[in-house]
Image 1 (cartoon, one colour):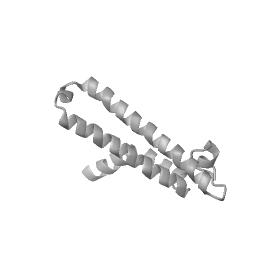
Image 2 (tube, one colour; image 1 turned 60 degrees about the vertical axis):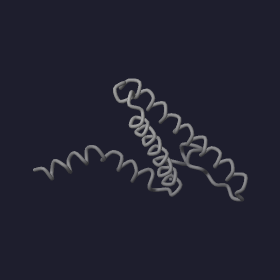
Image 3 (cartoon, one colour; image 1 turned 90 degrees about the vertical axis):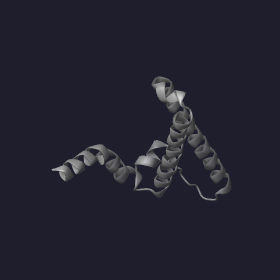
Image 4 (spheres, rainbow, N blue to C red; image 1 turned 135 degrees about the vertical axis):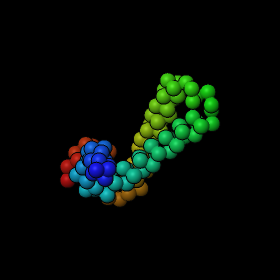
Length: 113
């Protein structure tokens, strides 16, 4: 019973992200690179928030302040990743000889084949 409950809960929790990854992201190598690098940026943001919670003891009791601070840090990392992606896209378009469509340039290049 415990094993079936585990797999049932895991499929409920991770079913939709796995399907989205397999049907949309995994079809193009560029989207996989964006997926992995943005996941790494999110992981860095969460690590910094966790370290901040561990280092500053007053934040451990002030839940709302820590929640707002954590969201702000994650949004700053999201903006930083987008800015990094935009700069990389500009530099590749200047250096590159062939016309490469980047996955975040338009919605049809990321979803349609």
